[in-house]
Length: 55
Image (cartoon, rainbow, N blue to C red; front, side):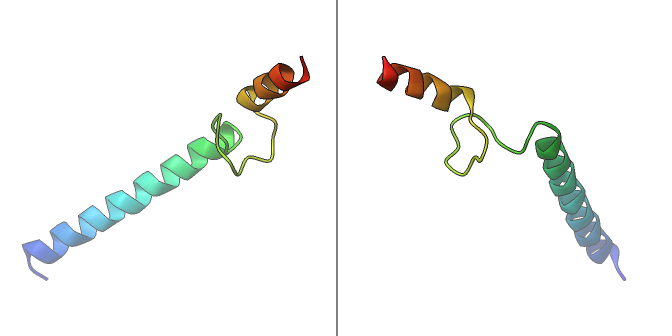
């Protein structure tokens, strides 16, 4: 293995670690940000839209 092989492995490992950190952070806050279309929870944005249409 030369230095370039090691550098590539380090870059790949850091990208995978960053992806896991992002996935773990999303799971802590419910996995949904306000305004996303695939959200199963009722976000604050959706509640506000409902209140506007019901009024």
